[in-house]
Structure formats: structure tokens, C-alpha cells
Length: 110
Ligand code: FES
Image (cartoon, rainbow, N blue to C red; front, side):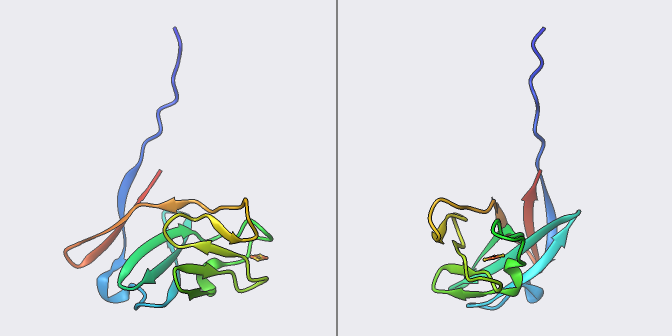
């Protein structure tokens, strides 16, 4: 019998709406051992892996340029919604689904 891997995901509370970053800002957060970079682009939240693939810099300590999160260590840049790098090319970070429910910001993690 062939076994298939089943990946479970769940929505968990990330923070309160009032604790989320304001437009144009990023913050670091951690949920169930997953380090996240939470960005607010024009009022829309997104959640990315906080660990930069270059040398593990903390993206949530970086800043936004337009819709792009800039790593504070060597300025690699990742689109806040897709996680795809704008500099250099061919890199990416994982993006986690995020939503607001009442007064809570929820993120979907595996
Ligand atoms: S660690 Fe992020 S750009 Fe180097």
C-alpha cells in the first residue's frame, strides 16, 4: 500500500489588530516556533519567513520599499506578497496566508 504524506496546516493567532505593523512598516513575530516577518503594505498585511536565505538575516528588522521587504543586513529584497526576490533574482522566502478575524490577526502555518 502506498503511503502519502499528509501536510496539515492550521490557522493560529498571530497578534491583535492593534499590535500589527502600521502601513509602511514591518515587525518580527513568532508563532509556535515559526519566526515571521509581518509587513503592512498600504493597509494589507502579509507574513513571510523571517529568515533571509542569504545569511539568515532577520527580515522583520528590515524595512519596506514600496511592496518590497528589504533585509537589514545586506539589502536583499523580497516582494511582501509573493516572497520572490527582486534583488538578487532567483531567490525567495516562504509566504504564509494571513487574515484578520475580529480583533485578531491569524496566520496559517503547517
Ligand atoms: S542576510 Fe539578508 S541580505 Fe544578507
